[in-house]
Length: 194
Picture (cartoon, rainbow, N blue to C red):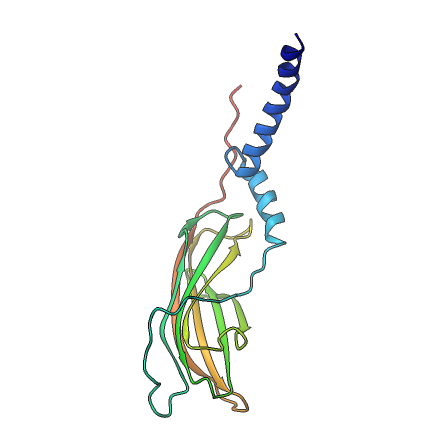
């Protein structure tokens, strides 16, 4: 008898726990709740680039005379290219950098966001000098929250890697990469059956 009471008490608690878990995991979230959850999550996200150097697998000889650095590979991609407002996409970056370790170099990266008609929507510049101290292969994954009010259409992200010798006024572009994605209309809640 005690075992049956224990099961009866756990039954509603288990259903409540399972419902909460499914809502938080996105399985049964409505667009309104998805927006609220992702907007709250977006406030805590670190939107900066954090390159991680990969284990050395390739080795190249010295840089040509007079060359301070080169981006042998510089690539940008987006995890999911068709998204809805309130979702969070991930920008993936790959870089193979060769640099003169003895030179006092500064590296910065700019990201520009363009609308379908070519209008520049936003620009972001980051100093990556402290992250790119050695030659090697680097990767990064940056979250990008899509606002609730984002209009549907095609968008383009253009990323550029710049090199500047400390004390020099001019920057030199080492690499350029781009990726496109499409914002679909905001998902509407399904009408509940009457």
